[in-house]
Length: 119
Image (cartoon, rainbow, N blue to C red; front, top):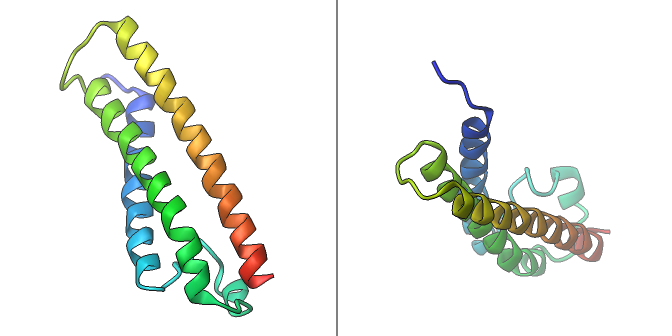
C-alpha cells in the first residue's frame, strides 16, 4: 500500500473548502457559525447583520481558494490526470502560495471584523 501524506493533506484542504463554503451560506442568511466566532464573543456583537455582510466576501474567497487547491492537488496526487512533473510542481507551488495568502487574508479580516463588531 502506497501511503502518501500529501493525499491526506489534499483531502483535508478540500474538506476545509467545502466547510468554509457552507459557512459562507450561513453568513448569507445572517447566521454566524460557532466555528468562525465563538458564541460567547458573538453575544457581545452589536451588529450581527453587519458582521455577516463584512465576512461574506472574504469567506467566499477563502472557500474558493481552498476548493481550487484541494481539487487540483487531489486530481494530480491521485493521478486522475497526468502532466509533466515540472508543470505540476510550478502550479502546485503557486496554489500553495495562493492558499497561504488566502488564509492570512481571511484570518486578518475575521479578526478585524470581530474587533469592529464585537469588541
